[in-house]
Length: 281
Image (cartoon, rainbow, N blue to C red):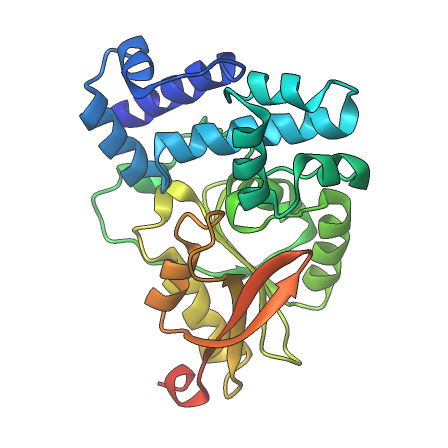
């Protein structure tokens, strides 16, 4: 928990300096930690490097300015920490799959990365006992904590429209196609799926619980009891996509195999499948 306090201090420092060009030595010095130790505990705890978090937060704020302001693109590039519009355009296009100009004229903002918030008590993280996960069907009362988790794992699900997402979530809750795993009042694992197609339409794990078997618990519940006997599928980033910070690797680690290439919301993605014989084990 002491490390978590340091990580939250790093996040607060980054948020206060989003319009500046930051380097690791400056960030480490601000929280009185070794640069290399800080990099290691940040990556281990939240699942991405400080560089990735900073870059994605700055690009998100830049995207907001592109849509909601008339500020010249060069000025936005400078505020995002880039020394030229060309450098900004290259990185922005790799992450958003549109140039800054195309994003501006689309008039549709969505975040790559929202600010990480780690302000709860997380009792399971303090326990030395092996956890017995209890996956349950989500209910309407779970929507607020569910959405808190969605905002934490937004890096894996670009182009999120919250109003539309909540409408879909309500439908899934009412048809018993949404499951949740909680630590107290905190959602630490969520999944929306389809009985009809066997597809997993959304799966997210709280960054602090990624190494504790949460994705496996969700998947085992769904494939073992809810959509048993079907070929289970999920989509994620294509190989080599710079927007991916590890979601593809996690899905492969769960036993999914590569299938066809797709394009979803303008993003090049790939479908993965968990064969019937494996899901029946």
